[in-house]
Length: 382
Image (cartoon, rainbow, N blue to C red; front, side, top):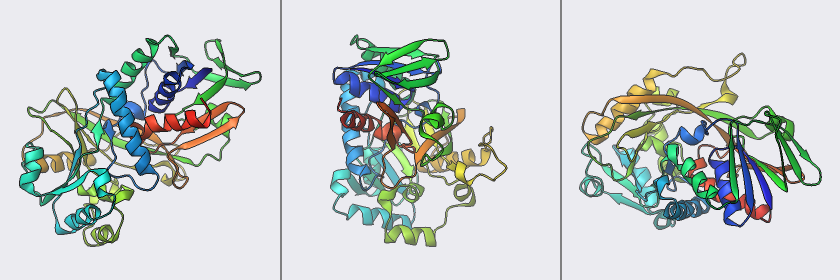
């Protein structure tokens, strides 16, 4: 089968991987020279610990797929580093204790550690905290280099072509599919998978209409200069309990009631996640802003970033490490697409014969991308 994939982000690349792995041929179109959206503006976390419901088995399978891809393409930088969520109050500790007592705790790799045990796992954590929720199943990849490395491997099979800087303008479904781009080039294939990321207008609207159950979410993040020691795990603070469904329960309800977030964190819907890149720098975030909550006169998210969230995040990381951070060398905002359909891993629909749209993993693209690609391939009988 000849497959045409539109969109060079993690979802488009994951679908290309699934198709090529199954013996098919892929032409992969990306409107930019490289993917520049949420795929490269994230932590690179493969985050199993916070998932629940149908997300959890999908995240587990996807994490194993990342490990498999990493064995074939070492340059993606996959490492099974795990994560450590540090709790600093009795109310936060109660949430960690509750989730560790649940039947699925072992499947997630959850272990609740005292401060000495935390430092045995991750000696860089020399700050003050009551305990750490260790999740051995979490992992990380190098998001800025993973996709080019995967594409290079796919190209080596002879069944994959990446076409950069070509924006698709139209798709026709008759005797297979035909795709026309803005250079006047047409491509013919048996099926199309359109992975538009957070671009919900244009071609996406033409194909699927205005009733997509998706919204856009904006985040702010940063990266430091290299830290002079290794973080052996990703780290999080207990505000992450508030944003991931796996931690819902009586103890979380009590936490939200008894211990509201600081004003800056509450205003920007913040949690701390921190991952050390292979070059030593720390990727730190993040915030959450939703386009369906913008004022009626606002047409889009603000073009600039706000400093208060960065001050809050650097303060929290410094407290947990027990030391000043290296200087911040990069700050950025990103926008991702979030599907609002209950229990959906993403929005996925065949909008015309052999034309599929897949978007909206909702900040879970790096975690769930490989499995979403496999699921689509199964649905298409590839």
